[in-house]
Length: 146
Image 1 (cartoon, rainbow, N blue to C red):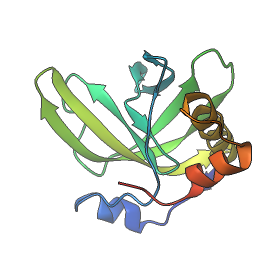
Image 2: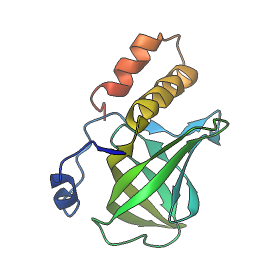
Image 3: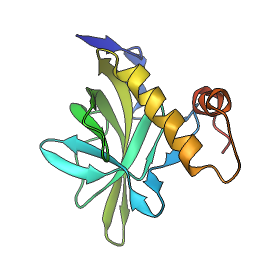
Image 4: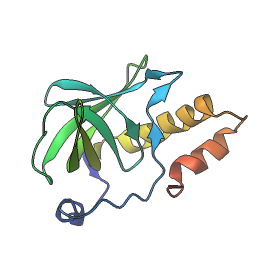
């Protein structure tokens, strides 16, 4: 069962500018990619990730803005997956291809809760100062700091 996390205005909003509400986290741990996303059967390293969405390098334009597609999010070394639907928000061309920006539209089952747990653990493990689970969870759920 897919649990929708956003209303249909997200798809309509895709044509406009992106407005992040949650903090994004670099998807690397100790210099190595730790989050991956499968889109159309292709496994891509995630650049950054939040409760709202993700960005990933993509060699060519993925699709027109506003395309909804299924995704599978994976955390390196963990057999669980987070599945759901996302929508393309933008595609920015760069020197080595481009970067695809996507927003989550819906999660299967407890995917939203699992993603929150993954990000909480990620914040704890990458923090430069000691941080509690409660503090990390508040950072993950809190507003964007940038």
